Length: 411
Ligand SMILES: Cc1ncc(COP(=O)(O)O)c(C=O)c1O
Image 1 (cartoon, rainbow, N blue to C red):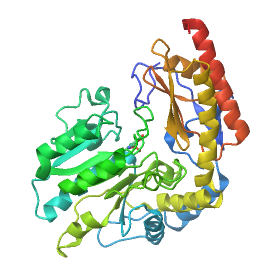
Image 2 (image 1 turned 120 degrees about the vertical axis):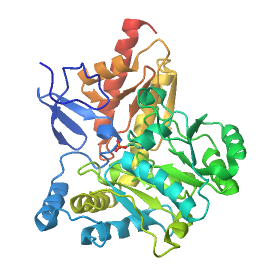
Image 3 (image 1 turned 90 degrees about the horizontal axis):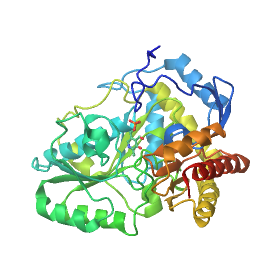
Image 4 (image 1 turned 45 degrees about the vertical axis):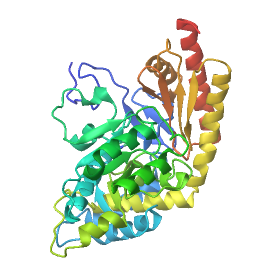
């Protein structure tokens, strides 16, 4: 029978699913009672691990007090104000203000809109062009779909948002040429500091610094999409700190709540803020019913305390070292073409005749969840609470899956 649920990023013809029913830390259990090590923190988000009673208590306490109240003019909620104070202090952007929404896609669309809007308010309405990178993933709303550098995800949705273009992902010269050509018409450059869903590509040396310089030269804003890298994944709270580059906007979501309740947001830096705050009669006409949702904010506050109290930002480096040394061993054995990553997000680059989706399926049968990205990449992004033994099981299961695949299709 056809399932009633039309799944995201799945063939509508698929009828069989792995149905998860329970989680505990880095472990998951499906409806058949099988146990898995979650090597992907679900979808790059569950840094604090699954099924936590302390999160349930914090969420329940907020629901019975006030589940939410809208934050449109003139309202706010106490828990939301507490969260933005806390996020403001954690942010890599000095003197920021925090916009809130419910997802990474909404955060990207909001940053794109605010970048254009700030230029309008500053008297430069001709600055409409947003440049992003090939291989980038910025969510699936229309702004993020237009800014993506993953062509398959754009098919069938034309016409997309105008004046949003992509350049080669690692070529700072290509960006320099594009920016010189369109100079005074550029609103912003939008990048993931470490490209995630496109296959886990850390920036090449000096690339992000080069971006900052070009944006300053041409009067464009720099937007970092830290939907994956934010909240500890790289061994720092944000990638901006890891790479020493301060953007004008930072998009975040996912690990801000570790996914217990959906939440996203944008840090807005002082340059765009100056423009948005200049006219006291100006009204910011964008936002969402659930902007500042009280229960999501309570979940975020608790989650951020857990990340700090359990030292998970520091632990990310250790978790990443375990994953990366297992992958480098496979590379030395010749079964992997390359290994990419930083902090606690890594990728195995497979040889051309191997199939990452088939390896993923075998790994699942071995009790390990990794992600297949196209045919050539398996990604790893475990919960930061995973124990050394669990990471060991994950990587052993992956290694056996890869060897089994190689045995079937040839080295
Ligand atoms: C870098 C990046 N930006 C945006 C998004 C979209 O986030 P969401 O799926 O919460 O809308 C994602 C999702 O994976 C992402 O990785």
